Length: 387
Image (cartoon, rainbow, N blue to C red; front, side, top):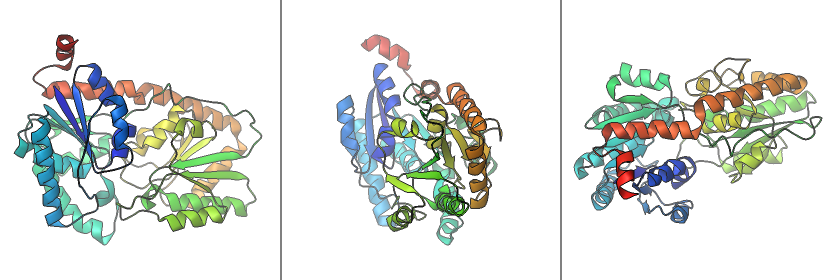
């Protein structure tokens, strides 16, 4: 049995889907990773997983280039002949579903972790693309022997209300999961040190990155000693990306410490007190929030789709901030700075949420259950035959 994973970056596959791939291997399946070129792809070889590069441009709108990408993907699928294709992100789901039909792939799973830039942004470009993308989703995702995995009920409601995907084909799995043994609470040795707050995400405007920097400016003006850390890199493939120059300017002004890409996230989370994501992006379930929850950090985020799946009750398992409100974000951080008991209580509640809902073992098991709905030979049975 062979299963192909297709995503728009090798970084995503390596960081978020490697555990699922390894579990599939343990069940006797061959797994092939497919993505555009990147610096993470070669790491799959260490785990005995083939990686196939695809010349895909995430930001391209050139119809000739896009047709070339589709033809190349069809060739990849005909070469590897998967029993099941698992696509990630809206663009890969649409392209993967279309290519799978042409290549004769018998089963397709489309995972859409948030509706992304086209549905989150109100820019002229996003509004222009929205009806086109909606038409493509309607024509591809809900057809054939397939399932659509979504991460929050808001997205499920939106897709069914717009009649883009039949409700019978939608499965809800909240997040891509987190290793709760690797990400675990690590109490700060010296609680008298300044409060340390982290935003870890792709540097997109809709993630609330500018508001994060502005909150730091406001707190500095108040004479507060709160340390702001920003982890992540610009995303040139997204029109809403913060530029490197902007991030460097905030760093040089002393508003925050820009860390860039961080390899050791558990180590970084062990050194901070708060994970903030003042996002107004159309999230699935943000990875940084579930990692922060698993690490026992106090969480601050918005009451918007995806984010509310992690901070479910304001003041109990985290704090909620209105979108685009830097002043409120600064006020909430000042509150946590003054009330360290609240800080600890929110962190403990967040950890309980992570263990109950976001442990990657639970997410992988639910993902394999979706596969079992589609595969003609059950994974467990095949594992017994090959073992």
